[in-house]
Amino acid sequence: MKTLVAGFGNVFFSDDGFGPAVVSSLVNGERPSGAVVRDFGTGGIHLALEMCGGYDLVVIVDAVARDDVPGTLFAIEAEECAASNVPDAHATGVSSVLALFDSMARQLGCKRPKVLVAGIVPLTTEEGMDLSDTARAAIPACRKLVHALATNFIATGAKT
Image 1 (tube, rainbow, N blue to C red):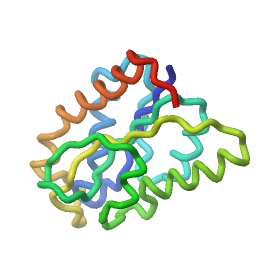
Image 2 (cartoon, rainbow, N blue to C red):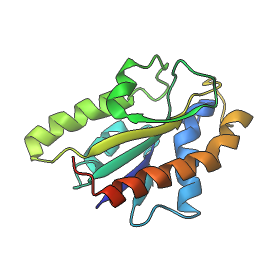
Image 3 (cartoon, helix red, strand yellow):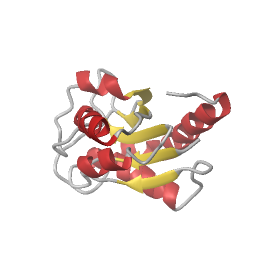
Image 4 (cartoon, one colour):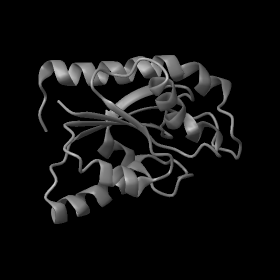
């Protein structure tokens, strides 16, 4: 099974940089077995293009405003991000990436992978290059969540 773990977010808007921070910790630590781990920052088009690479699973790590306590970790189907009320600090949100991928996939004949979002409810997305203490403290738990998502997907032989 081919897996992509994609950091997504804008490091110039506090907790919106959560995805890149988690991915950086995976690159410098233990990554899920056999997974490609990359930080896409705000490059939604680059992520959509990479998703055409024959992946079975894509785990996008991002901060997504949800009706929950800041710092809450979650794993959701990517389509659920369309309903989020996140002020989009990186101009291309997860739902835009999916729409762009679907458009490219029709033209290129790419299969759509299973796309999950592992992330955090941000405390703040104000200008600033530092994560809140809340988001920083959640990085180790999010790493474990990403590992669990990838491992469970592989173990069950899930197909899209």
